[in-house]
Image (cartoon, rainbow over all chains, first blue to last red; front, side, top):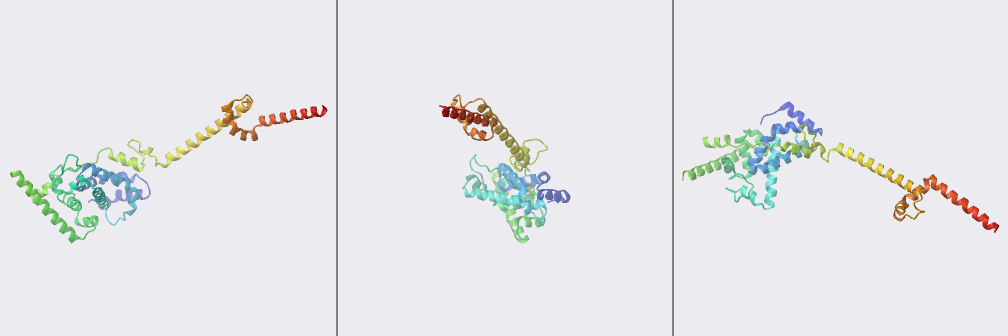
Amino acid sequence: MLSWAAPERKSIEQLRAGRLEGLHWIYKTFSQRILNQCYRILLSREQAEDVLQDLFVKLPGIISEFRGESALGTWLYRVAHNMCLNRLQQARNRNKLEWENAEALAPRGSGSSVELSDLLAKALAVLEPETRSLLWLKEGEGVPLKELMEIFKLPEGTLKSKLSRARERVRDYLEKEAEIEKV
Amino acid sequence: MKKYKRLFLDAERIVPPPGLWGRIQAQVGMGDAEGGLAGWDARNPWLRVAASVLLAAGLLTLGLSLEKRSGNATASGGAATGEAAPAMAEAENNEFMELVDPELLGWHAELGEIDEVAEQAEEVL
């Protein structure tokens, strides 16, 4: 994740001072990455947009929790990750069928909000939401391991182990798909 | 390995819809340089101040208007002619007007003079 030192500092200071113009720079700089992270966790564009909107609406109120120990983008990834997991947990608690589908191999029914529009979405659907988030940030966004440790609050060894297992499962899925296509 | 890497390279990157920033602005109560109704959020403190001032001015105008109307009705002897509903409506106001209306005070004074005359007349008889 790139660090935008001066404008990032200015935006954070503005938000902390209750001046909302700082929000615009942060939105312009990070919204697409956050949106795609949410999309890959939730497997739904609509849900991802909801979380993105929710995050930025809440940001002025929670910016005081950002201590500056990591880059702002890293912290935003963490906030988005937690919001997505909370959303999934709430849906599970309400026993929503579409969210149970998101954790299964394939969606069921046309009413599902899960979108497996590309092969990656189908491959990620075999993983748990938290692992989807990890794999996407590492492989899709190129987030360095040190930042991933900040986002997931896990030691390096645990992260490497999770990544390794996740890659294996995705490759297994791709091989199965390839065999199905041959038939 | 190649196929795995390509999976992420070829993955769709979605973009935020155009209206999303406007919705965020509206919800946080930001002024909107790009147009829209963001400034008219009820949480905007300046909007609340303006609304309070307008409300106070409206109430004051209404109060003054009611006072003027009840004052005019008393001067024209609305109670004496037996106007039921307007007289009742003004009854509450009259309690205040009785204390401050110089015309009403004058009428009481006249009544007093007439009574004194009657009493003097009776004494004579």
